[in-house]
Length: 156
Ligand SMILES: [Zn+2]
Image 1: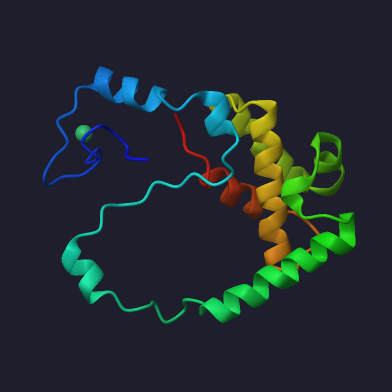
Image 2: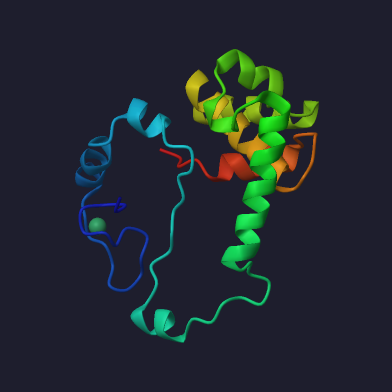
């Protein structure tokens, strides 16, 4: 979705001139409970047409084939561990399989205090963190994984 009715919120040139109440009203059109069900919420910077034209893949970027291999390996880990992929875990299973190390759980608690994530959102964050660890072939979900998962939730 766009960040505001004109789509230029946060942009310097041309600047967004949407009044704050209009932006709030616009964003409120997607309900909290609906947004809660979206695992990955990223804010993307505006890309100038010229930049798209000039874009060359970053040297460290994965090829599609490499990314596919990583995802297949992560999904195989999930199948072996719990018989389904992380996205299909219920609340109790999420706590069983996706619990982060103490520092990670502490980070999640702090984020919940600050941003008021719902229980549903907290489980989603843990499942995303678990998936990040799986992509890294790690058994332990560490604080970094939780931080990365939190970074992929849009703050309202
Ligand atoms: Zn705007």
